[in-house]
Length: 212
Image 1 (tube, rainbow, N blue to C red):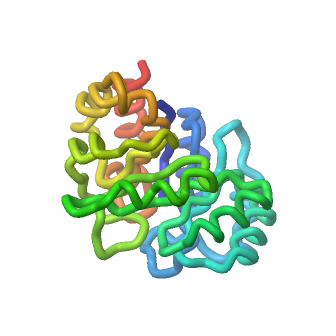
Image 2: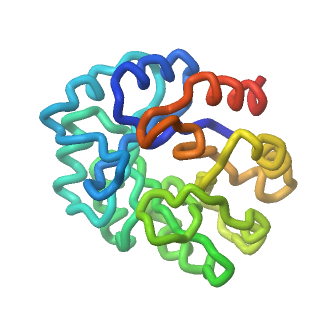
């Protein structure tokens, strides 16, 4: 299991977080989000970030060409899709050389069978809490629902994860079947002092609890 810190938009904060060596760092390119990172022309600092953390761009129903252009300009390695993107769109982005993560909002009524059509065109799925806000609602879903997932595509666990969830995350990561597919833990709003500004010490403590 790897760690992703998402919803970043302040250069100094990001540089500090990079000292924790997260596996992935995420930037939101959805203008309606309070964590919208800004226009590409103002993001040279994203392009030039040091270290080995992989850069993820979060998009909602964005045109393929626009996603490809932003990814190329900023050196994004992964695109995370939170809209109604079709398998065809995912495939087009994958064919351009990007890693593709497709997000699904999970609640009691979610049919995990919907993921099957994306299995061959996505590198990972992202299971988030279903809600009105694209790219995050700050609350967790019932992780017991993951038992209904019968696919073999690795998944990212997202949605309102906080420091108090460390024990439950470790338990899930060690479960016989799901542990094999839990690939990335995605943290965001519950580790903030304001939208887009992360609490370094809180994340440092959380990372230590999970990974030592």
